[in-house]
Image (cartoon, rainbow, N blue to C red; front, side, top):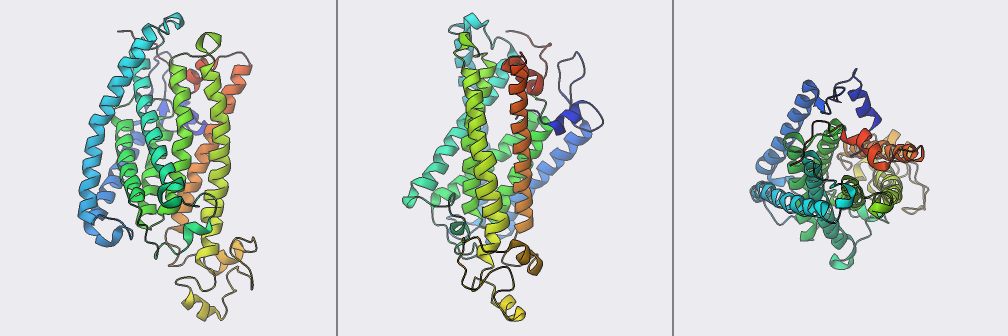
Length: 400
């Protein structure tokens, strides 16, 4: 959630979005941009619930619930999350306030200000949910049923074809139920409840893209690649949560045990590996743009007999005679020319584009991390740099 260059243009005028009037310390959101994003959010939520009721066949094979049951389960989970969020934030707020007044008193009671304490409480919920979901996702990928190879073998994502896959692991469907509820509630909280940050618009767009990806991946039964995507995001978010909380508590330098510096270095490393290597290489490229077409449109694959008969050969769409899946011989561009769209590739362009949009956000945020590091080299502390780039001012803040 660090401020990106796109959001900086919002704060400088000329684009609609988040701005901070000079000297006020308040984040102001352009009403048109906010209204548009809120309308899109409402439409997404209505569409998700409407599909569960109106289209009984929308749920993937293996789902233990019917459409109406899934509708009720999602609604109940969303409602149950609000008091759970409140409880987590209440406990975290009191615990951190006590810590700030006692063990961290030598740092000047860092969360004495109400706004700072509220931001810390908000972040505590993010840390809780990212940690819990990472544990569930790791269980699915590495433990349940002996584990899966969805992260290291893209062929397993599409074999058999998603139309034929029966994902009988209840843990996978539980994960999607929880994640959809979490992101609906998170988006609502971001819009109506949480403290505003400079990247408010960017994060709002991120939440809307994420909800759309969850709906599409579950509806098309792309739950294997969806689970891998969620794991990479949730696990890498834990370090950024810890970094922000350490920053709010001013745990930098020798007096703070170098926790801000340590978590910052960990974030640079973890994000480089998960979001700038595994995600673009294993998921976006191998898993979607390249790998899905190689596997799903291969000679003899499900649903390809008609195209093969019309073309007169199974080797007119990028596959070579005698080649094996994953050997690197597949010609993606020949495949795209022959099959720009096909019934066996539902959601290819939509899901690929949304996943690529997330990758662009990753690159922007990572560049901002390096920008903060550069500013610290020039003499500004990471705490102050983070406040300038991300938090906004707090001149109007007050202590209890």
